[in-house]
Amino acid sequence: MAFLGNPSATNEILNKYNLSAQKRYGQNFLIDSNVLRKIVESAGVGKEDTVLEIGPGIGTLTQYLCEAAGNVICIEIDRQMIPVLEDTLSEYDNVRIINEDVLKVDIEQLLKENGAKSVKVVANLPYYITTPIIMELLEKDAPIESITVMIQKEVAQRMQTGPGSKDYGALSLAVAFYSRAEVMMTVSPNCFIPRPNVDSAVIRMDRLKEPPVEVRDKAFMFKIIKGAFEQRRKTLTNALSNSVSFKTDKEKVAEALQKMGKNVNIRGEELTLSEFALLSDILGQ
Ligand code: SAM
Image (cartoon, rainbow, N blue to C red; front, side):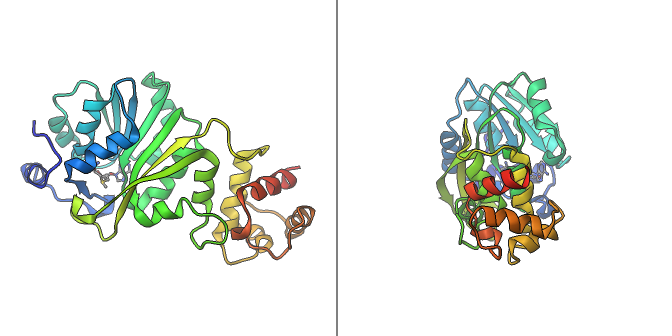
């Protein structure tokens, strides 16, 4: 078994299995052992931990995780990677490989089946579905303690912005509601094969025990938030009356905004998290 984390080992594995990186699956393989070590360190993985890895690819980060963690569960969509993973992870008996689309897996059920009470998610995510994966991990009630992921640097910035920024949206509101987030490092395209067209960053999100704002029904609030940002340039009253995520009468939204002391022509991107919580409580009454 080759220890991965450098260009020649990665190329050797890809050649051995006659594979090339699949663009449609967002495959950019890590080839820098320093970055790999720092990801594991940033996630604070120890022998007491179960780690869920999304997209192990040829198993590079997985090897580092298997060394550091008690148990590793990894979910890989690409069937061609499974024999490779069985090879590169053959020396580890603390890893389970699942060939599935992560967005179709019931994570809560999977973790229960594996007897995992608390889990750290660690991944070099496929960039084409970063947002749905993170939203799913945050919104589901699975026992996830923290999420440490490599993502596009721009998306990491978007995740930490507030009202008034063009990048403010459902993702940044979900991150603020569910977690405390910190960018741990930025990573150059040279650390991957093939090189991505963008800079990357590793962000760590620690799940909050209590959300920073009180809201009666968080699922209802996030329906409103998603509706508000589906057509972000529209006023909130128009966006919500035309939304697919959340549909309500214009008048009801206008009335709620008036109760909140807000202008009825305000756009969703101007509301803070606590204002969305208040709006949700009023509309839900
Ligand atoms: N972990 C490896 C590394 O760091 O070198 C590969 C990371 S690569 C950026 C993303 C991985 O996610 C690929 O292996 C890709 O096949 C996998 N992937 C893409 N879409 C997926 C999905 N919907 N569910 C599970 N895995 C997926």
